[in-house]
Amino acid sequence: MPEGWVHQRTVLDAGQIRDVVRRLAAEIVDSNPGVDDLLLVGIRTRGVPFAEALADEVASRVGRRPAIGVLDITLYRDDLSTIAPQPLVKETRLPVAIDDRTVVLCDDVLFSGRTVRAGLGALIDFGRPRRVELAVLIDRGHRELPIQADFIGQRVETAPEERVEVHFASTDGDEGVEILARDP
Image (cartoon, rainbow, N blue to C red; front, side, top):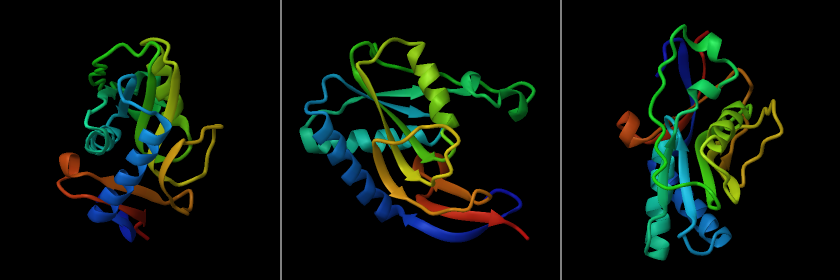
């Protein structure tokens, strides 16, 4: 748990995350028959294990795993000057060309919309997809930009000053979604 924050409530446990991923994968398959032109792209950091979980579930449904990409949005952020004097840029990895494909941009939490805006900017630098859809595990509201998800795991009512923490086994050792509040 980040310093200065306290657990307020649990939104999803590991089993509930698996159930949500199953439902979202079914929605993605229904919306995109066949996976040959489908590319799931996870926004670093926790959008990546979310995209991988979706790809595994899509594969169990249709017998083929869609391509998976990893997108680093560091240089596309509109708050770049405030996050660090020397931001750490990580690798973007797109295993196939995005031109004329359906790209499902995957992120763990949709909040202001600024991360997704940065993701779209980064993605477009790699080509021209036929369509871009957005899948999020949690939609917590409070948009600052006109962005909405196509596939939503769960909508969660939050106060703007609260924090939504998502944990995946591959990045955090455990799985779950919790709401944190500032330590009084």
